Image (cartoon, rainbow, N blue to C red; front, side):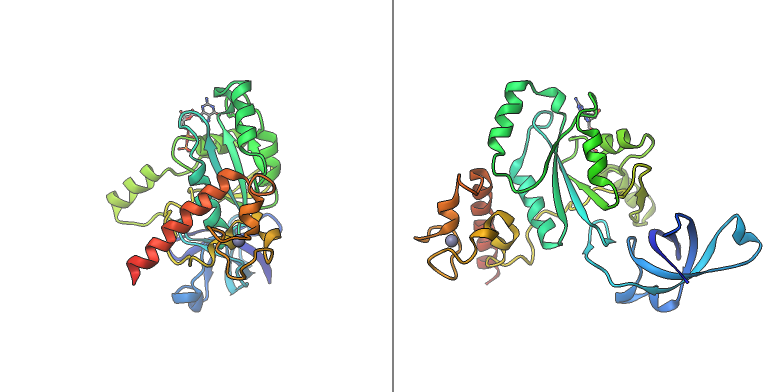
Amino acid sequence: MLEGRVVRAAGGFFTVLADDGIKYLCRARGNLKRGQSALLVGDKVTFNPEVNQSSLSNPQGIIEQKLPRKNRIDRPPVVNVDQLIIVTSQKEPSGDWQLVSRLSVIAEREILQTIVCINKIDLIDQDEVKAVQTQLELYPYPLLYTSTKSGIGIEDLKAVLRDRCSVFAGPSGVGKSSLLNVIQPGLSLQTGEVSEKIRRGKHTTRHAELLTLESGGSVVDTPGFTRLDFHNIKPTELAAYFPEFEPLQGCCSFRDCRHLTEPGCAVLDGIGKSVNPMRYEHYKYFAAEIGKGEEDYR
Ligand code: GDP
Ligand code: ZN
C-alpha cells in the first residue's frame, strides 16, 4: 500500500502523485466516488499499485482509503490547501486593500495561511513604494513585493510556495497568471473567462488540478475565492478572523465587545499601536455589512 495525493480527477479516474514522486492513474472503490466522501483534488489517499506488464510504463492503481482532510474550499473544489496567496497591485489596476482584507477573512475561516503579494512593483517609483510601506505598517500578514517584469521578489515567492499547497486569488489583471509563468515557464492559471467559455460551450464543469512546481510545492490551477460575500459568517465571529485582534482578546471592558463604539475597547485603543488603521476600517465596514445581512434575514 502506498500513500499519495490526488492531483487530478476526470472521468472517474484519479491521478495520484505518490510520495515517491511517481504519478499513478487510479480508479477508486465505489464508496469513494459518491456523496459526502467522494474524492476531491487534494485528497491524501492510500492506494494499491497494480502490478502487470503495462503498469511499468503506465503506473496504475486502486485507491483504498481517503485520509482525513484539513480543510476544503468550494470554488474551485479542492481540499488540504495550506495557503492563500492574495495578489494585488498598486497600479494597473490600482490597489484594492478592502478586497485583500475580504479575501483574508475568508481564508481565516477556511484555516488557510495568508500571504499578500504586491505585484507590478516596477510600475511605481521609490516614493510610492515608501507610501505603500507606510500604509502597511502593522499589517498582520507577510508581504511580498514582486514584479514579473524586473524579477524582483520572485525568488521570495518561490520560497513561500515550496513544500506547500497554495491557491492564488485576487482581482483579474494583477498578474496571478504571469507570476506562475515566471516561476515555471509553461504554467499559467486558468482564467475565469476561459473556464466560463468551456462551461458554456460544453456543459461540463472544469475540475481544478494541482500543478506541481519544479522549485517545490503545488499550486491550484484556477484562482480561488471568486465568491466574495460573507455568507454564513456571524457578526460575533468576524473579530476572530482579524488575527491582529487576537492578542487583545479579553482586554476590552465588555466581554461581548464588538470593537465598534464600546467604551474601554482594547481594539479601538490599539489602532495605530498594534492594529493597522486601514485594517480596522475594513473590520468596521465588514461588521456593518454582516450586521445588515442579519437584519435582512430576520
Ligand atoms: P491575472 O488576471 O491576475 O492572471 O493577470 P495576468 O497574469 O493575466 O496579467 C495581466 C497583465 O498584467 C498582463 O498584460 C501582464 O503582462 C501584466 N503584468 C503581469 N505582471 C506584471 C508586472 O509585474 N509588471 C507589469 N508592469 N505588468 C505585469
Ligand atoms: Zn473591544
